[in-house]
Amino acid sequence: MKPRDHDPLENTELTFLLGMAFQLVLSEFVSRVDAAGYAELRPVHGLVFQALRDTGATSSELAERLGVTKQAAGQIIDDLEKRGYVERHPHPEGGRRKLVVLTDKAREHLSVAGRILHQLEGQLATRLQEAGLNLPRAELAAIIRTLAGDTIPPLRPLW
Amino acid sequence: MKPRDHDPLENTELTFLLGMAFQLVLSEFVSRVDAAGYAELRPVHGLVFQALRDTGATSSELAERLGVTKQAAGQIIDDLEKRGYVERHPHPEGGRRKLVVLTDKAREHLSVAGRILHQLEGQLATRLQEAGLNLPRAELAAIIRTLAGDTIPPLRPLW
DNA sequence: GCACCTAAGTAAAGTACCTTTACTCACCCT
DNA sequence: AGGGTGAGTAAAGGTACTTTACTTAGGTGC
Image (cartoon, rainbow over all chains, first blue to last red; front, side):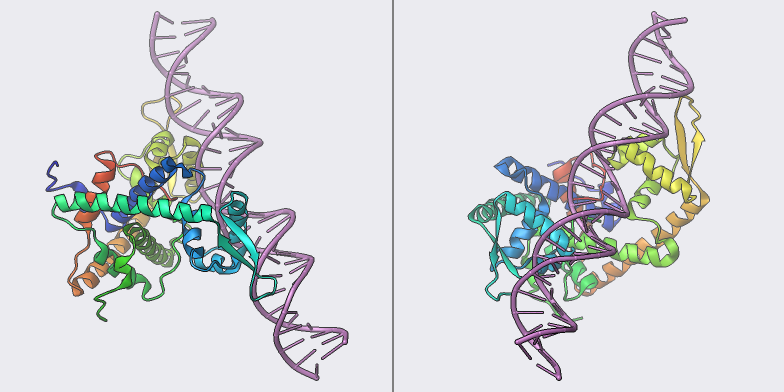
């Protein structure tokens, strides 16, 4: 472990550091998930799976959780349905509603992706501890609370 | 300042915290820059201005720094040229090259945006210190170094 | 019990921003 | 002079979203 007492990165703007760290962590995660056989899935699909994992949701509810229009949500569902990750069922409360639920294939993906993510974060934690640092969870949470308060908006795949 | 000893956010994945913090900080920054009269500029334009600020660059060099094709860089330059932020000059070393340089209008924007960014980050630092925390510069730098080593790739406006 | 409103879903076109493909042009080199 | 190399540009294609507009199921008021 090479010492980096005065890494010039530490003088760059927090905003840049946040963006760079996020981009690198996510891209490493996506690479590993791709290598595990899920190259057809993009990060937004993981968000969809998490939003649907408990009880499923209608496409409009999903749209709200993703922060996109209901048409966009419908298109994503179309795509995932064709690939066998979700199914549209008649909604128990009737109406035109349809309940979108995960298939076993999607639940298996969630399990694999979750394991990969925690493995990656564990490796990062180890590296930081070797440098006498901890993962900055409390700091990031404080930044988020400062800017968003109690209602955290959706995480969106764009700047 | 409400105490948050067990903010559930601190139990969520680092990757999510990074993405959320980045998205919120950037979006607050963009809002303030818009309010200062620069609603026509997107974050990527700030990256362009920073890449060109010292000596300018050719569109191909700019493309490499942005991590996009030279055609995409050319399109961005076309747009900024129409709006009066950059100019294409004949390149001192000749060839078909053109040197893209900033106008005074762009340098003024850089100055305003820089002030806004440092103000925002200062406010965040103050808030965190009230909670006994510091901005996690060293931690973020360590994460970046772990995943990217010495060659930091371009920060790109997509997941 | 029928007209009306509302909300969910869908269809199609439009938009933003990028890439791919293909070309032109200036200089260099032998 | 002919040919290669690399910068720049033009045009079409692709992706993922939004906007506009429609259909349909069920509640609501009278």
